[in-house]
Image 1 (cartoon, one colour):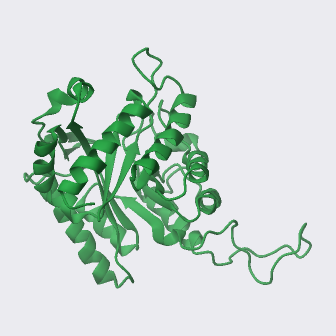
Image 2: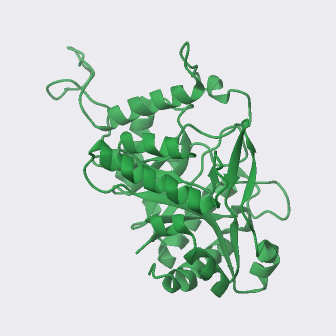
Image 3: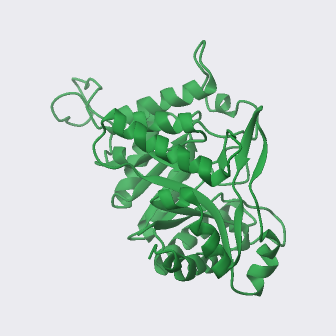
Length: 339
């Protein structure tokens, strides 16, 4: 069985054609879409994090709210930009949200993507150390975050505390056991996937790779996944790592689908420049159900992953995006043996 969830960027636009015209709209609709996904039999609700943009930003209040309103589905991020994060405070927020959700949090983190503003992380009080890049700083924040998630005491207690302390050094609270094993790294290349494996994190791979070898996107991504698994085994970690990939999938089953995505039928990979280097972008899967099934059956990376995240056009509203998910869960997944 392949887990199927949705991934929302949480855009809002104050325009009559948008169903999400404000931040309040996006937040409440995100909760409603997670509830709808659970009712439809989907497996996850994931949210993108972007700062200084009219999109979802601070994830933990939303994750906690979704956790309180659902009972079964996984709840996660794809991804949190670790350049902006205070690792200690993030451990407390993540622990609280995970406990509210009953241990269902799946946190995707990464170095981040191109920003809306110049060096936005500096506005959050974070500066790379001398000789350190912003990517290095993100990994340093990540290392501290993972260390603190383990729940070992490290802070010396006050001999005259306000409240009685347990014996020994103190850890951050609330602590959520098992959350450390549910951290994912959003890798944009084969090398970063191997690094994620060495750190004992699961792998998130999206519809973009920050490299191009001339092969189709799904083939390059399948190689990335295999390198990740090989590096995991070489590192000697216990257990099997998880892998997710993101795809834009729109089976055409009615006139709305045809109006919105009919022109995307026959979509192909794209190659472009991103932050000074060549990048390869995956195609959109749109078409009649049989065609979408056939195209996905040939996708090597989707076959290799245990989790598929459907990128949803959240500005089209909860009802329409629930319809898209229902089409995938009801028609596409069984035809591919995922259900």
